Image 1 (cartoon, one colour):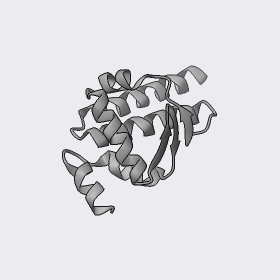
Image 2 (cartoon, helix red, strand yellow):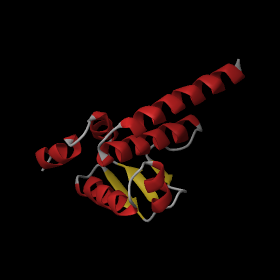
Image 3 (cartoon, rainbow, N blue to C red):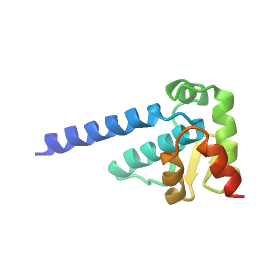
Image 4 (cartoon, rainbow, N blue to C red):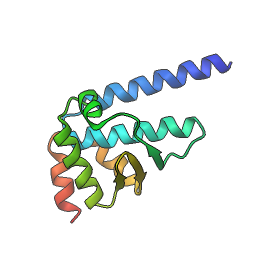
Length: 118
């Protein structure tokens, strides 16, 4: 039974990542990536709101099909909006519900959401 649960969890995570990578907005993709990591840490019994990014920003950018400069801009915007706090590679998710809303947007919605949240 434990093996089936593990396989189901892995399948669900793969589906989540697939959906994440199909999103057009870089902000949406990165928000979804943070939520994906949060879910993985939660399932391991670790904190879902505070964790260390083990990948370098360049690697995350490549994984999400972005540039490292775009990753830096998105992190800056999410910090400014108070949704996350990132110090070096240590991440604190401050507002998971708003991150979930953001991760569901498509195309230029991140920019509109950012402007509407000011």
